[in-house]
Structure formats: structure tokens, C-alpha cells
Image (cartoon, rainbow, N blue to C red; front, side, top):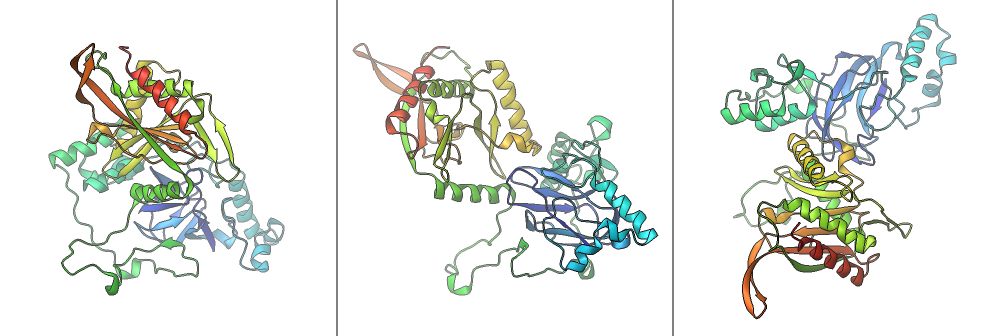
Length: 448
């Protein structure tokens, strides 16, 4: 019996949530065959099978959270000669089991030897790049893989979107290349109500995997309601529900920030009366961030609180907070310090579309050097935004407003944009933060 442990689906992610098993227990599968759809911190990806053989057991069902490195599925590999993928770090249960996996001893029997040789060949293949980490896979480079659902081809992200919008994919007309259903197709079907999904029948009890309760839980069980003694008054309404996907990640990230950052916030207003009509607010905010970092580079930096070291970046990649119904995404906008207005606007639109479709790649969700939140598109003047370590600063822009200002002994009505700068006071001084904010305000006050 071979156990497949969940590999790291994105650098450093501690866990992932099962969206849908693409095979059933008892199915025969091949190496690289899509096995399960998993939702990571921000994206939905398909995890391929690392073995040729029969799937004998699932270690969780849809909605369960599996920790990275914990068992995900078990396989019966032909001749019991298959080995775990190279991401499997756990040692054999006994010395005998370890000895059985050695090719030298497995070759003692002719039939088992041939099977062992096949297993050895599959191990020599390069990582396909479908997931982060070393994982037994075919030599083919796997891009956005599609699978067939109801006779149509879809990607994992579109399948997850269809489930969320309760759309039956088999009734959706594909418009993508090679007959692939796109996110736009699913949204159109949901808006027009042309492909409502039927309520799924519950699987028979016999087909459901029995949950395991080891000393160290392998996945998070669904939380029950609090004990009666801790429940609120009987007049309270609503039901307890677990945080899933992006909201679960957001809760973990915010808790981590609370533990690791010493935040202080400065607030001020920028007079944007000189702006031309129809000015791109987001671009101007990004350009002002670059101007602030030019004046005080220490706010465009990372801080390692364990080593007590900082890295001041020469370039600027901005983590832009994107609000969605599923929770908050922070997408990385690269090269802000050198990008043109057109290039940056195009990159912003690309990131927003990818977030909307849940198809944003993991590399676009990390390694930003400073953060920006434009919550003013909704409401609110000032805020105390939260920093994601290892960044040391974040700027938040509130809602634009008109304000009476004194001008040459008289008064005029100018447009103002409120700014809130939160910085980690362990590595940034108050003077540095104030000069950074002053430089931003000066850049925003320019006509162009």
C-alpha cells in the first residue's frame, strides 16, 4: 500500500482544502492523471496522481482541510512495488517495509522486478511543474489542465466557479479554444438561469470514506457549535459555519500579522485639485508610492523578525488588496517603479480579471515589497490597514471628497484624497514614515 501525502501547492502554504475528487475509491489511475481539485490560499489547482494503480482510500472529502505533508490518498500499486512520490517524507512503518522498497531485493522475483523497473523509470521523470515541490510526474509540462465534466472541457478554477454559482456545466455552451468552457460562459449561464445545477444526491454511506482520528489530526474536522454553556442567548439567530478557502487564509494571515508586527499609523490628506478630468486614481497612487520610496527607501522593505535583519528593495512590487465575495486577495503588481501608465493599467486589469476568475497563479500572490489598499472606492476616510510580514508598510486611500480650503485670503473647494500609512515601528522611524507620506502627497498634488 502506497500513501500519497499532500505536496506543497504553493511555497510555504501550510494546508489546502479539498474542492472535488476527480476519481472514486476503487478507480484505476495512471501517473499524471488529475486526481483531486484543491483550493490553496488563493487558487484552485488540480493535483495529479503520482502512481499507476488503484485508489483504495481517500483521507478527506470535499470541504476538508488537509495539512501539507499529511496523507491525502492511498494506492494499491501493481505488485506492491510502487514507491511514494519524492514529496513523501515519512519513513517506512517497519524495517521490513523499507527493505521491500529496495530495487535490489525487489528484483529477486522476475515479475516483481519488471514492475519495480517501471516504478523506477517513473521516479526519474522530471517534476512537471503542476504543483510546487518535488513530485513524481511525467516529463510533460502541465499547464492549465482541463478535464471533462458532463461532456465539456473545463479547468479547475472554472469548475469551482460553476459549483459556487450552482451552474450545471453539461448545459453550458463553451466559447473557449478547443471547446473549453470559460469563466465568462459560466457567469452568463448563471445570470440567464439557463443551466441550473440539480441538487446532488448524497452518496451511500458505504461509499463514503470512514474518518480517521489519529493523535495528530490529519485534517481539520468541521467545527461543531459551541457547548451549551458557552452559547449565546437563545434569541441569537444564525448558524455556526467554518471559514473556508480565502477567508480561512485571511484569518490566519491577520492573526500572524497581529503577532509579528508593531504597527503605527499616520494620516493626512492630499490635495488633488490640479488633476485633469478622468485621471486614473490607482495609477497615481502607485506612482506616489514610488515617489515616497525614492524619498525614504526604508518603507519599501522586508523585515526578518527572527534574524533581526531587513532588506531595502531597489525595485518596487506592490501588493494590491482586491476585495471579493470570497474574501481578500493581495495580488502582486510588478515593476511599479519603472512601469508606464499604460503598462501598469494593463497589469492591474490582468490581475483583477485573474482574481475574479480564481485563476491567478501563486507567484502573483507573494513577494510584494510594499502594500496598497484603495478602500475608498466603497466608503471610509481613514483606516489602520494591516501589514503582511515581511513587508514593513502599507498605504490605504480613503474616499475622495470635496473640501473648502483657504486660498490667497479667500476660499475654494478642492478635491482631497485621505491617506493612511501604517508602518512597522521596529524598523521604520516616525520621521521616515512622515517624510515618505510627505513625498506621496507632493506627487499626488501634481497636475500630471
